[in-house]
Image (cartoon, rainbow, N blue to C red; front, side, top):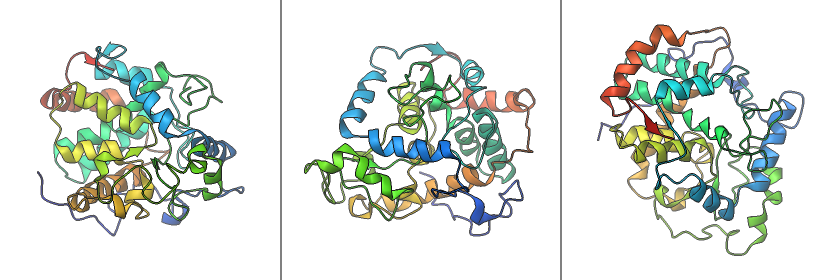
Length: 297
């Protein structure tokens, strides 16, 4: 395991744009937040349940070889025109955001495994190839539902924390919050059971984590944590679920926090990187960490 990182307080060396810090992640039911984002979070809170998680877990199982074999390059090509409907900070193809994140991490001098993590962290949105509008995984239509592809994830199976999620007024729309099995502080979980034993709302994070494990990639645990939990803002940003964390999770969350700064502060509409210019370097990293050739998706 790598040594615990020091999460920077001054983000000036990370940021690649002139946007003020308090202008990032603005979520409010007014003119500052796009209507599509508000609708997205209403849908997320209304549809993410224990039952939905288990259904997606079965649908996206890798036990029978996944749904399709593709190289990382081919998967990138599929993602070129995908735009994240949940992100109020960027109206650019998701592929560009991945390159910006990776190059920001590289510029900061972090290890190559962390750079590769930046490049692949959002690739789980490839689920839109097999998703439906009804399941919140429509990446084809400009107005398609994407509530099970992106957005801040929360734990299903226990009470949704009003003080840690965006648009807490939508919590009452969640069916599980009317179910006594799931609407208490601990719900179906045991105290300090550990972050890996929690079911976060199904999305690209969980899918990509499972995809990497299924393909026997050799990225370190810290990288897998960053990929699996980077959208869990209630946990790593707002301090929720401490009563469910194991002792070892206190160190693991620091890696997710570090990654989050690059994920957030390298979003730049004027930073138009070209994949073909940086791909040879990252192709070598893919091969180094077991992600060369055709992979199960």
